[in-house]
Length: 339
Image 1 (cartoon, rainbow, N blue to C red):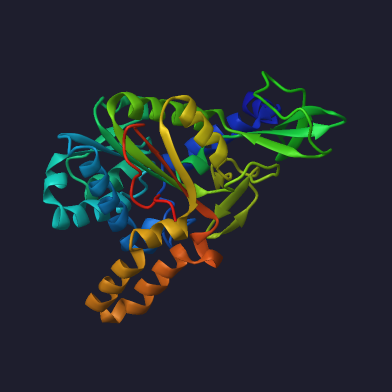
Image 2 (tube, helix red, strand yellow; image 1 turned 90 degrees about the vertical axis):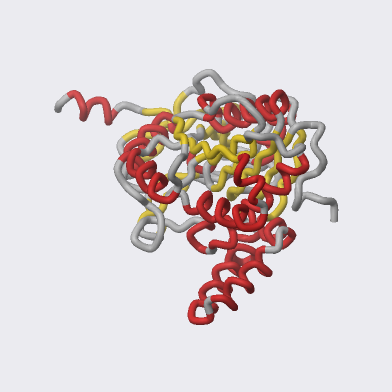
């Protein structure tokens, strides 16, 4: 057996397996849209990106209209969301568009090329830490779900950690344990993402010190709990997340309470999480979709059904949540107002 086979046969901690698999998966492919493995909200409805762009513009006004302002997106896909956002604000609030510097945090050469075709003049970075300092408005749509997680399973009154070996899970003693509940039922699974918490901490500190706001839109529960949420997609269907690393899109539910707590600990104000359907309705997504449908009667059915998919509880409206982070002195951002 060669050395590469030996290495693959060794137990590998789940977060390290996910990091390796994601790097290989995104390195040379465009996985979005009908021809890819999955579809995200910006690809479903252009009203999604337009509403988030207008949210950013109103938030910028609330910040005192700083110029320049860094408009940052984490994991920007094909650049669809940002292109829709900039088009909308250019028509409605050209002063904001003139103040914006677009910064995309993206490591995939293939996706950077797709983004460049839509967004000339953009600046790219491998990490959020590399974005120049200054007032910031940040969007992160389906970014945190792709970050690596660890899984711990309760066994006989203690915790064991799940490792990947030969396409399945094996359990080992916990390596450098993060905070884990002292009590949990036998067989309970606790997920933990150090990468997600590190980014939330850095982002919150940046907003606290330099001003700004951020939106995190992703899927996951609004309350803490136990469970195995690891999943994979290929060609718009479920796949085995442990088979063929790099061949499928691997994700896990976002622990919104953990992100919120980490952001608060770094000094940011936190709003939500809210169901995405409620948030988008408050931003006027359905009204915007109706305007687009009237302007394009031939595609009206698709436009309206796409928007409905984003807000309906049985679609993405309930599973997906929206978390707002901002400078502690900023007023409540649009969409998070008390009911």
